[in-house]
Length: 106
Length: 121
Image 1 (cartoon, chains in turn purple, green):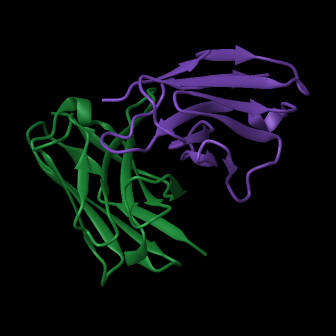
Image 2: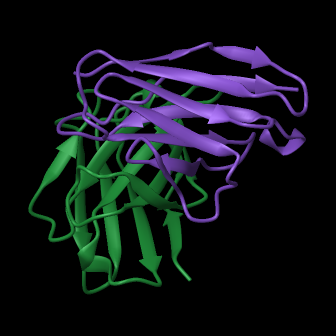
């Protein structure tokens, strides 16, 4: 199975900061990667699919990049409402594994 | 407007069975795959199972293979997750989500609010 490793596991930043979360796959997954935001007590929301495509309705301060095995999620200017846990997921053939999550705090 | 609604969660004893149902609306159901993802209390997300739009392809996590069965009824816009031989470690909120394409190898799109399954004596 493909393992997904996110870093860092948690971070704290100031409002307005640029924040980057990384996700590494144990083998190449082309661009079959999605990023999710999950606030406490809520279901996950899709932010990015296809590694770099912004989900309809997601704020434009979120962007995704990468291809193959290394991926990033960037928040260009951190806002108070971005406090959440962020997950990457690969969705190629076989088990569609998630990263362990990155908790973002202000 | 797309809506995804899970039902069927509850308390079940170890070794027991439970059937979760997910009803979707607002789109042509048979054109899209569906998936289940779960989240144990205080833990991260775990993919459980996916099914293609026609229902001819299903995939399962190793942790549930042989115990869970995913099926769909395109005439009723529903997918059902039959869970047998339940264990304490199956305790989680179970989310149903649409997949962006008819196949199972694409990203999710719309998610339900989840249904809680508790396996305990």
